Image 1 (cartoon, rainbow, N blue to C red):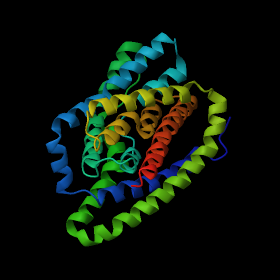
Image 2: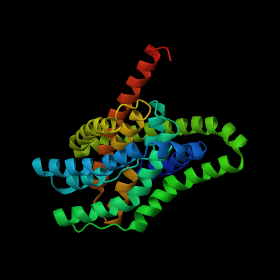
Image 3: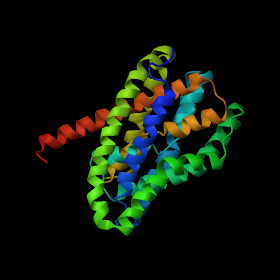
Length: 287
C-alpha cells in the first residue's frame, strides 16, 4: 500500500527540519562541551560501547531465535547497526540531560558511526551471506551533511558572534520544534498504511529494543542523574537516515524501507512516552 504522502515529500520536509534542529544545537557548542566530555571520559566510553554493540547483538539473536528472514530481518538489522539519530540530542536535552555533556556525546556517536556502520555491515554479511555492502564514504557523507555540517555551522556562529548565537539559539530551537511537529504529523499520516502493509513486527521490535536500550543506557550512566537521560536516549534512538542510505545503496526492495519506518515508529513511541513521563514528573515536583 502506497503512503498518502509520497516519501520524497517527507524527505523534503525532513531536510530543513534536521538542519534547523542541529543548527540550533550547534549554537550551544563551545569549550564547555569538550570539558564536560573530558571530565566524564569513562562514562562517555561506556555509552559509546552501549550505543554500537549490545543492540546489534541482541537483534541478531532475535532474528535467529524467531527465524525472521527477508525484508523484515534486513530492516531490523540495518536499524540496529545505525546509531546517532538526529533528533536524539534534542530529545535528550528535553528529558533533562546535561546541556554540555549531551552534545559532546552525540557528536562522538555520529563520528564513531562512520567507522562502526561499515564494519557492522561487513560482519552481518559474513554471518548471513547477504551480499550487503556500504562504504565509509557513503556513511560519512550522510553523517556530515545531515548532522555535522549544521552543528559546525552553529558552533562557528557561536565562536565568531557569541551574542548573536545567544539570541538565535532559543529562536532556532523553537523553529526546530515547530518543524519537528509538522514532520511528525506528516510521518504519522504515512506510518499507518505502512504498518498495515508490513504488519506490526517491525514496530513491536522497535519498541522492545528501545526499552532494552533505554535500560542499558541508564545503567552504563551509573548514578549521575544529569547524564542518565542523555545516555539512555542516545543508546535507544536509531538513525533511520543511515539505515535508508544502506538500503538504497544496495537496491533493497521498498518493503525494507517500510520496515525501517515501522521500527522507527516503535522507538518514537517509547521515547515519547519517556519524555511525557519526565514532563509529568517535573510538573509534579513544581520544577
